[in-house]
Length: 315
Image (cartoon, rainbow, N blue to C red; front, side):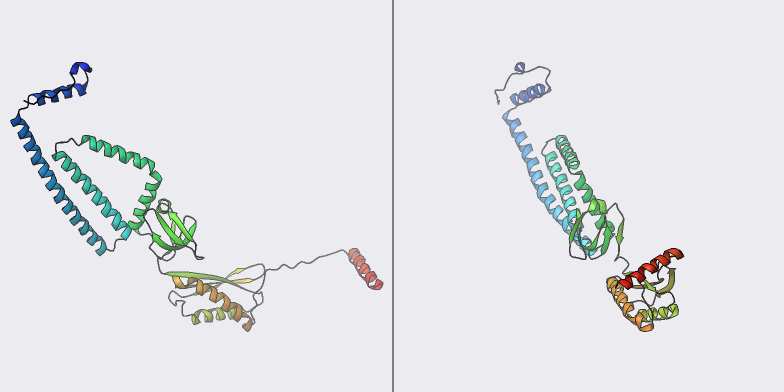
């Protein structure tokens, strides 16, 4: 017989659940023979061997599954950040399931472990609510692909070329080479203007000529300049129309299609060509001006003339 010297139940409250369990355990140990002890040890050893075997088999399976998903994602050209994220989630889930299975085989109750994991997950989620929102936004962007690396976008009051798409933020580079880091939470729920998505853009100009200038001549000059520029598409065709009779100019609207990459170069080059070519054809580009006519009474005009004459005599 094996005897253990433990505190008596009378030393603690009789209604305590812990004391009742302790008394039951003590009685079981007191009544245990060496044969029972050997059988229990043998039984536990068998469970331990099964748990060890399950650990190695489970680890091998987890690695194989991870490699399989990696090949599938690479074959489907899934973004590397999303690839790594999904595989890490799968690995963590598989390891948790494996650990809980091993603990259960060893005879340890898993209810307390599950409660601890749930409480920890809830606490972490509350503490990182903003970060998790950005994280969820990054996952949506990587899955839905409203824009890709290299696209020029306008979002959240910022615009620039997309340099990187991370899980928590998107990195933009502006035209003057500034780096802007935009959180993905707002990006995924706001309006995004993807300038590069279609690959083509429409350029629009408004040119003014003076009243009295030949509009048909201006139209022919503009058409010639557009047709000479090989970067401008013939389909869709360009558009030229008299759009407004403004205060100091006759405005002509010109629209043409080109590649997104050529948008600004075509826009600036056309402005320069029009400025140089219009004067060659007698076309004037007016500046904003205002004509003022003053009507004065005859007496005031006569007094003003006398003052001018007197000023001339003094000289």
